[in-house]
Image 1 (tube, helix red, strand yellow):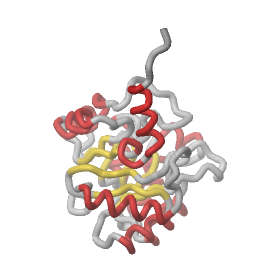
Image 2 (image 1 turned 90 degrees about the vertical axis):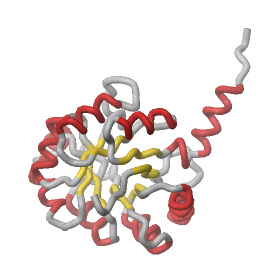
Image 3 (image 1 turned 30 degrees about the horizontal axis):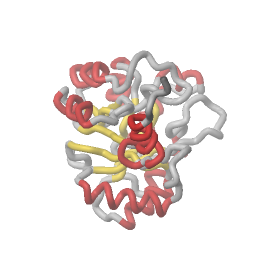
Length: 226
């Protein structure tokens, strides 16, 4: 896949506790990700896309458009208009939540929606909960699939993260590059996903969230009360 080399993608979609929330923060983090050897970054919203493309030219940008206000259960690029805004901003890859049950709840047909996304001419990354939705996404025109919906807020988590089993299933059956995502906070897990055949692995908080990182170390340094 020419747009996205194999390797590490750094997610710059900020957690609520992160002090790095504005577009200038995202730009600095993107430059740091590139300097550290990441093959791409993932950002939220057209403003972030434009800023990173302007400040770090030539660096691939995957983009989502997260919206809690549109009234449905899907938050990750919920509508065609959300995708169009990312394409207009210059995103190299547009990602959507490709959960057929959630889309059906919102009155959408997953196949038709992804077909419309793909018609923009920009590669589509479909975040799927399983192989059936992955195959639907690929038939509709998705260029890659990922495990990005696993453990997402308000969704039932079927097991511990990261879900390497899902990655292996997608690699074996999806027929397109697979991006491993959600819960990749240990170097060993990143390596395991790549060894399982993932095209790329997305890491977010474990690289860019100082509150999350500090809490991990503080927990290790705490002294149990007798």
